[in-house]
Length: 244
Image (cartoon, rainbow, N blue to C red):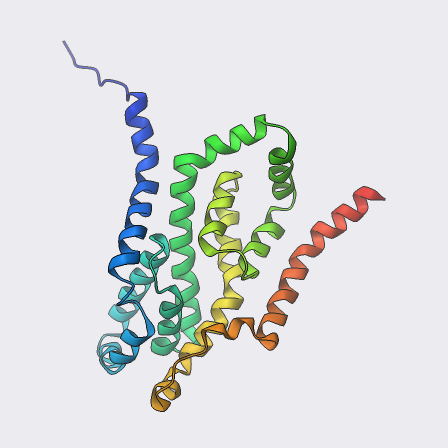
């Protein structure tokens, strides 16, 4: 007599779905308390010479450790994402630093997206399809111009990064489109902070701290908002044609 595997119970399948999100949430809470005094600019300043020496002796290993750490910071919403971006510029220069930063941030964001989509996204998207009113209109609007909406969420600094990771999962965005719009959408802002990081040597020499609000200065924010307006343009054209 052969044993047949028992089918998963609803409780087990629900646990498997929610476990990745639960782990991310737990790590985010723990990290906000345990790591906030370490993942900061002061720590980078205090260890800058050791980091540069390690990079010079072990370049490939430094890249791998840095990218893995950045992915963990983004995936678990740990404090220090801005400092990590500066570190990428400080260690690797504007290029390839901006590539390492954008790639790591995209991987981390994608892991959050997959956890949310697996745990809640597909079911929530189906419920939104079945519902009516405002909720369905919002979902239909995003679906109609997914690329534009996704790029706008990444380009406009007012949208929190974590929120921009979750919304696409909840409205049924496909993985390839999510990955591409995330990478290219965060590239302009990432370029700014990587550039600041590449100039940290002079900042350290003067005993100053970098300007984390530089992205909101008119000469920086203007071009980024210009890109956001370009992303809005297809939506506006479709609305105009629909009314015509």
